[in-house]
Length: 583
Ligand SMILES: [Zn+2]
Image 1 (cartoon, rainbow, N blue to C red):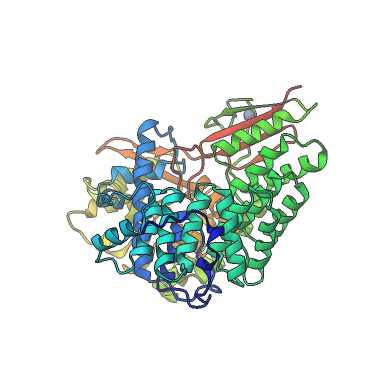
Image 2 (cartoon, protein in one colour; image 1 turned 120 degrees about the horizontal axis):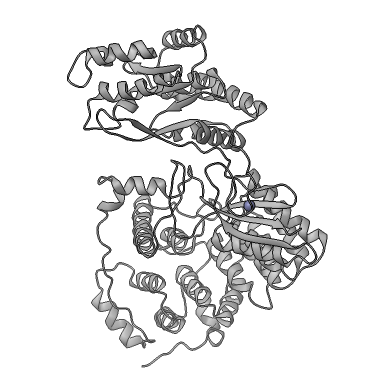
């Protein structure tokens, strides 16, 4: 018998029974699956009936990572990574990792091909036969629809699976299958199907899990019934804080339907929960703003820019275009925007103005110093690797020396050039700095003083003549000593290490301190770019300007992320949007 599943409305029986709490065995993998396909956060303990199998998560993450890697590689080939002249430039870390043959990304196995999915709806006999071919799959129905999601199969084909399952099970279709079907409907923007599934779920279940809510919200915002998405958001709020994606969808729905007040209220609510909004949400306000006149809306958009500044966030390329377009659309203000870069001197190549300095004000410096002394050095785990006696010895050492200009992580610097002798590298670096009359402190380990092929005594004696030295026990961590000595010496003092000290950033107490640390690091960390035996050591220049959204009232300078450059969290963009008023 041929049984085509033509419309959900005509099969009300299909969705009956199957009590809500009796979700099928596939449920545990559902949230993981949707999370990866759809970016749904799996934070909702309230709804999870079973915990997610860690192996599944790992496998999924690997798949996602592979997919991402393949995509990035493709993009990279189409355009060259922009010039990075400093260590913190966007894309610089990626380049460094590509030079390293041991980089994890290069050992990923190739992605396996999956079998050819049906491209048109099948009848029950055909599905039966296919199931027979895949006997080894424990839950063929769930597996096949998951494959369809991966390949974005058409809604019709997925529907024929549901019809076949319903026919076999007295009209029962499991919750998992239904949600996965909803996923495909939302993906293909099949509005009427979305509304049908929504009606069925409303009738059948008192409450849904957040994956389904998220899909329904996303599906409904483009329909006349978009306000019902706000009700679903209220349902989520009864048990948890909605995700930034949920807020994004509702705000976009409100803007799309010209309800500006609802949109701003949702935005305020999101900020009230300390959620960092999606850049897409902020972009939507700018896109919609082109048709809005009046100071009120305009002031709110400027607040968004200040939010980016305070949270050290950078718009993406298309968001930057939206910001430019909005400024240029403000009547009577004559804004002109251009995409540009900043010179090493800190001058904008577009308008010639100098952007903000990287140097911390004395208040900022004192604040950061105090926090680091307290949280990283005294309280942090790092110092547990040293002894209180050694700490005291070091503090006294620093106290009885005049402030240093440069603090060097001796071991780390010596290992920068594997082919050269370690003591020779250290000597070359120290000699060059000493020639410039700089007060240099080298932090080292006791083992460096033992004569061997890597550490020669005569080299080390020369180093000690030109620099102060502190030798810690061989087991101590260098970083906290490095931070302590540099900060203790004052705002002018720089440091050299290859290490980017990300661990310390993580143990800093709050976002404000982390941002100041990042800014201080950019302005104070010297990097060595090259050294040939017997020749000069070349240092990378230190940024003297701060890469952050900034304004002078009649100008804005906004760093933004290039779409094709992958930027690590400790790097900053190199491209800027320069906006100024024509006078
Ligand atoms: Zn400019």
